Length: 193
Ligand code: GTP
Ligand code: MG
Image (cartoon, rainbow, N blue to C red; front, top):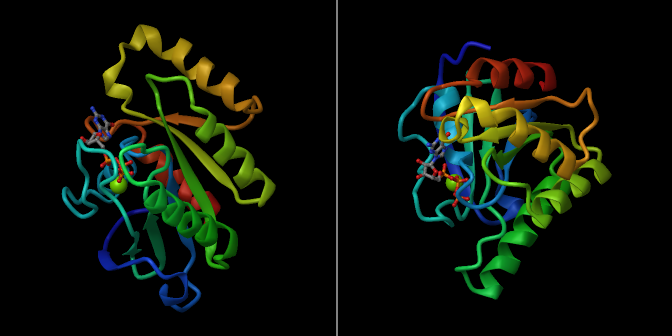
């Protein structure tokens, strides 16, 4: 895919107010601060389109970005962020699970893992939940610029083991700093669409 046009189409909290129409959607999931919003910006090559922050809990709504007048990138709040109230966390969980389980237009999900860390229980739960709902998952290991090349294989292997990925399930190393993985992510999105 060549990205020619990108437009913000709104931030939502109510599932029944999401954009109508039949455009396919690709959503981003992962822990708060893992780099979901940064991945969108890098992949579409717009520096500040999706707001990112070094403080976790930046994205608090379901954000729609129309790409090439033909499909949506959907940015979601992260999970596993302890600094918000229990009430707020429950609200996000309902919103995210409601969106992922009910949204007819959703064609696939990009699940982000931090390449430096072994996936958390929440990461494993998310993967299992997506599999159960038969939602295609593209696995991406973010912040690849933060570890040395020499350590990469070991980290990738740890992620694969913890998530019990099949040998044929791809895991794309990605960096929003260097742009590594952008081409691969775009090719995988094209497959899903
Ligand atoms: P929430 O909206 O809170 O769920 O977080 P998010 O997953 O959208 O993360 P976000 O894109 O806001 O990035 C969090 C922090 O990580 C920011 O300070 C980013 O600059 C940084 N970051 C994201 N991706 C990368 C990357 O590939 N490499 C490096 N070095 N930093 C990154
Ligand atoms: Mg975000």
